Length: 405
Picture 1 (cartoon, one colour):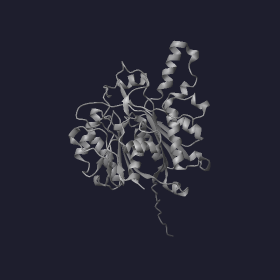
Picture 2: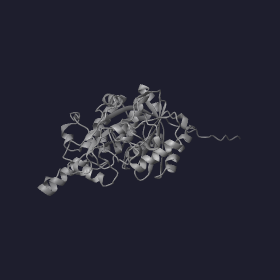
Picture 3: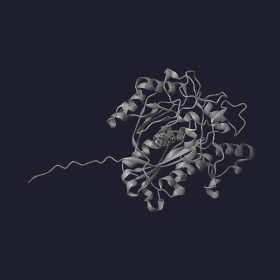
Picture 4: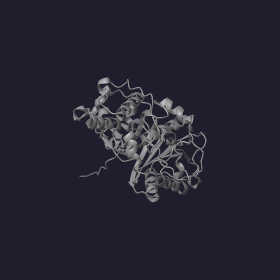
């Protein structure tokens, strides 16, 4: 009697991008954001929402004229601003993806969201209600409207989504961690589709005070050159607000429903270490997984947050490791650090560069650390593969490869 040993064939699932949605200081739709990038607009300006005369943080990337009419009135008064941003951006992403939720198994769709600090508008209002009016005046919806997992919950409720979902708080890497674990949920078979992104609305009186306590933020009033990442002199982060969401799905699922595939999430790797060695190891693990060299990277979008330690780590990496022909640009120089929404916004930017075969420059002309060669002019180039990096202030590193379909 013969016995044949059968080896189990493990099929590696490919994860593709089919939808994008964005609310950003550069634009409130994908087309407006695209125009803002290539027109090299600077959306950093003095804070206008409240009096900053005695505040430490004076400038920020801010949203204005957001149309909330797409949110039902009964829901709108129950939620914070950062949830509103998330509902609008995720709705845009679902629409672009042509994902018909009524035709899908809603237990196979997940929601993965990054947010750093919750909802500030409703919290500040609650403090005022408690201390100046009395406990009976506090909005009863505050408990469900302020916490960082609220966008995930409300996106799920509005769209009747029941799949495996998670929210992540990881400083500037919040959205990148959401992406990592969302992608893993598809690869492991928990989901077929994920709605993944982040949302932040921290440009409020109390939030700016809290963020300023880190010592990482720019406290001046000059904003004409944007956030100025990799500046030779210490400057500091500039806070931004906004939201960006992606529809990601298993490639065969996308093909089966005749979806337009924008790009592929080729891989995501994370590690921890607040130094150049850990940062480099994170990138090289990702490249090794896909048998790639540094020369295979057409475009590099660093964290580029304009905080001294982070910028120096990335500048050393660029100087020592990155191939000379790889383009470098920092879109967030025009709108600030978006924390939970940062990575999904960078992916939206990278996908636009792929579509247009053109990369927007990093706004502002100034001398950089180690004379690193960030783009000073919009540059035409066919972009096949983009390395996107995210870092937290404590040392979480996330490396993402986006490949043109």
